Image (cartoon, rainbow, N blue to C red; front, top):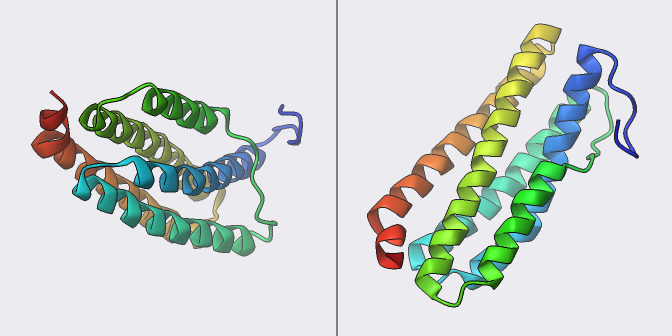
Length: 167
């Protein structure tokens, strides 16, 4: 049990904790993306980060609606995993002098974020279905689909351009 979270005793507690975890994570992503946008030198990567920032802001609103549909206040719980991914990305970005290598590092960090989000949203959907929270499955699925699409775009950008320039 975390310092500011209640004990997880039931599957419903686990579902709500995971929902709070991803809510916190999405908020941290909106704080990290402007820094990445400012540091990106590749125009397509910069545009991709800008698009993802707007998408993430929409995902936060969607999560707030999910909380409302469940009769719960929209609040986050600290997500050590997302904090770690972002901290590691900031360290690598700060330690990289070559702009092309920095772009490749930021792209890799963005994919780590996407992969984390994909696992969380997939779990939330499975738990919501199991618990009968059918009303929230569609918005969670919409976000999962967006996260998967972003990951594919990042992979294509890495393989076709960013990683090649860094090599």
